[in-house]
Image (tube, rainbow, N blue to C red; front, side, top):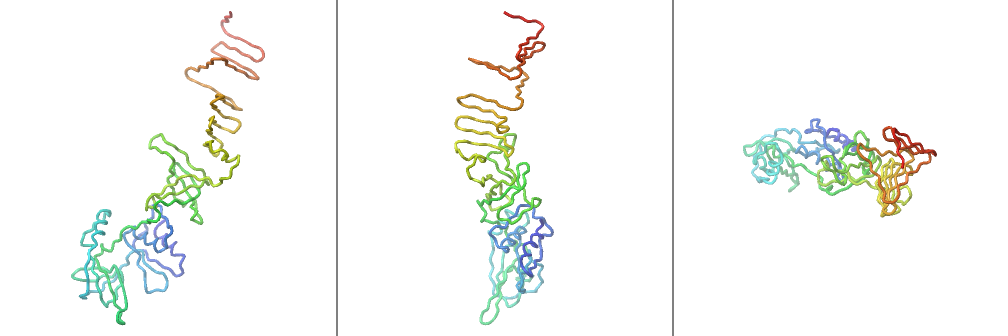
Length: 357
């Protein structure tokens, strides 16, 4: 979305509203942007500050009309009034010089407060004290039945505004549902939004319990329609991450396996499961059909309704201190090169040489 499209969408809720975009020049927003517990004016003011400018209302209309950025003002000539004050915004100069690549000089932050009868608009150009200055603030009040105007004049660069951030979102978590998953990112439909299309949704990084830059770590993404939290660690909404899949149905049933807190589960939507209980570990590929059970007292059980294969490129060793039992309902066959033992009710021993004691 472009800033111009955002302006149109926000102002569409107001009858007769109009906005003149002076600064965005078709720029796309590029990063995740959220309006949260802000008025539309506060939100758009924050958007304008990304261009180091502000919103300028048109006070002569009875409908909401304003410019996004300072409009091109008329030249109003020279001001000769003697009632004025001078101040310098050192803190603003230091902030811009340290954080903005644009060339800023200390003299750009010298401001003149002037009182005059002349009517001026924000953005108008005037000559004052031998300098070409711009109106950056305007205040009007009635004194002794006369309208008095107070203006703040400054060089053009002095009209720059610091980037504003939403301090109210620091530490905030918002709940939403996963509508798409790819790699280690998710798209989320937040509960605060009435609707959210998948195509226009933003990709958020998903934070698992441990992630490494190499080939180690934990990769476990939420499923579609899972509930997650969107966490904002700072005042920059683009730094938010999706965290913590949340179980919405806490009713104890056999299906959701919440009956025993001492049992720990890791299970996929396809039924693959690892269960850790106080006395056993069960690894399941399909419920009741394929699983490995490791019991601290009863030992190890490998069960499958399909084939079980044990394959090694080297050696397989099986040993028992007491008994080793091999049983089959149909047949047991042991083969090595040209030698073979077959037991299927009749025992057949085949080989080049047969030795018996």
